[in-house]
Length: 403
Image (cartoon, rainbow, N blue to C red; front, side):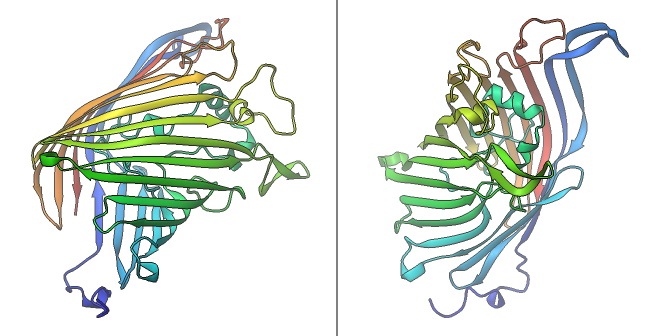
């Protein structure tokens, strides 16, 4: 309006643009096929597979989120976040300039932010260790997981990309007058949102979604996204030690997908499909200046999920999700076809005794189960490099509150 009413000096003195969120909880975690000593304390007598379960009272990490306006068409967000041990990092920090050149189609954001995606991992209604993230957004093929588990020095220059992770970069976005059409294009540092410039390459992200009205059902949305990135495969050295930020031998990776939000009265569905590919050098953990293992190929996979919300009332929501990831091409032809495949299932409910503009409380209950095919560690006596399926489950009861 040009009257500076967006300036913070015009806010009511009681306005405090900061919220705190944390969740005291009880949870149970179980993992199958863990390698343990046959006789505890005596590894010489051999090892066996055993299910390992633990449970007890706990609490989540802490979010301290500040967001608001700095001036007309200039907004900000700062979110210091700590894990349950109290170790802090910045989950997001950015400044956004809206309506550049007086058009809603040009908005610029600079800093660390969530990628613009129709189905957001940051706004999901799951909290448990196994259900609190989307498997397909963070999937890494089994052979790459093996390579990274050996903790080679290149890992510090070569972070794994996660669609659900906040990234560092600059974003140009825009939307139609009713926000039915939206787009986003972002240039990102290839550091998975970590400060300190661990490498010197850049990634690209692009997304688009379109809403359309369907009679009494209201607005339905569909979208698409694509990510193109590079990661170094070896690094420059000085007297044999890695030179900071001097990653070399960059190789490509990409992710592409389709999304949808569909509403039928009190039920809504979030749907996602993702296709992924990593260059063969990344898939095998091989430096670009070294020969590839015989028969190696770039891994590809497909995955997706359907997440259902049944809003019985504004205070009671039932949630459920089915998710799968399937390898379509293993790194080696001799690898089992289903090596590293994932099945995941979660369900639960959230009950809100109250929810105000200044405070809210939710009773959250959840059960989640994840099956990772042939992903358990093999026994030392095994002749196979692969173990049996690994099943992990979570039972979660917590009080999720913000003020």
